[in-house]
Length: 237
Length: 261
Image 1 (cartoon, each protein chain N blue to C red):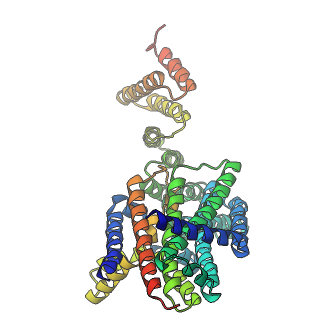
Image 2: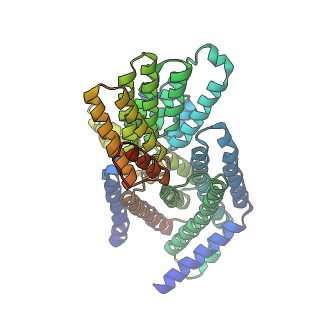
Image 3: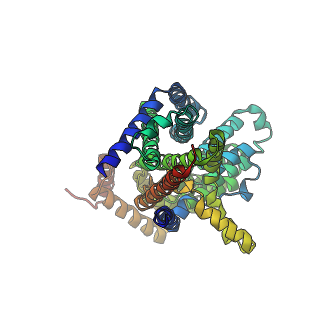
């Protein structure tokens, strides 16, 4: 009988140890962040119930559908989408890795509601939670560019936008077209800058073209780089 | 040993056949397929996140219907065995109660594996038709769902074989499944300095005794921008799932051998 009990206890203890090891894994904490109770108080109770039951991603999808319906209703446009920010907050607290809402809702704030602070706030939070997603960096570049264009402060806006595109270009999966865009930004900056800064931007452009020529991510990039290197007499034959 | 394995396989094969032949389970599978197919339509309501909706909803439904398959399979087969006294025919043959429990568990796991794989194949087919991007995390999510269902099969069998009637066993299983998704949050209660010592102790006991389904939840990370696949965590979670199910099975077998039929 004693043997039988030992036979029962051993796997139970082994399971407890396995659970401890699983929970101690550094990925466990990052994959299962604490439930955002206080941040999502305005969320419907059924959304809480299902996300609490382990279906956070699926609930986030349904919250996104709710946001889309909300944006699509012309009645809500009259109130300048008063509930949009709260709804988006709920969603991104629940699933911070759902990247599309950061892009589209920030776009609405930037271009429709003319609220760049909220647009940039959303994009920054997206970048903080998803540092490897290059599209967010590109959107941030576009917003900064747009904002400062409105403020007639062309140079600094271009610089900041270029910095963001640089970051996006450093990330895996960026479209090759982005490298050509960055090259054009450098040229524009060199054109608008004073003599000292002109050298700085031209230097950056040349280094980028050289990299694009040596290690092209697509043939068009190599041709683009070659064209510019020849134009400035840096590539002969 | 070989003889024992043969007996387990015979009971498992029989349980599997019984489940496959049963209409309710077939209807459940068809319903699950229809629901997963339905997520193909729902995705239209989420512009910009169509692929995500299809995969997330499909995986969530696969797990829910997988759990229903586990509970219903065990309820139906146990009802026929205990209430209709069919078990006596099996037990008059040289099959011990422990081996019977092991065979039944294996049969249920086989049934639920086949069902889950069918549902996942349908989901992949829909993803393919829709040209949805499916990364390697889908495999981790699928393994996580199967582990959840094996653990569920373990404790459901424990409750079915030890409770006084099958309805109570089913109710306990459903509650255990629901609570298993909440145990992750007990950690916050245990580590909080505001929690009383007695509450901390009780919470710790529940924390380790109840299953932790969050350990098998790779579904929610399937659309991380990096497309991660956590092999070490998956291995640890698999070890935990297998050991937890084994512990449940052994306790069930032991309790069943003492039960008065």
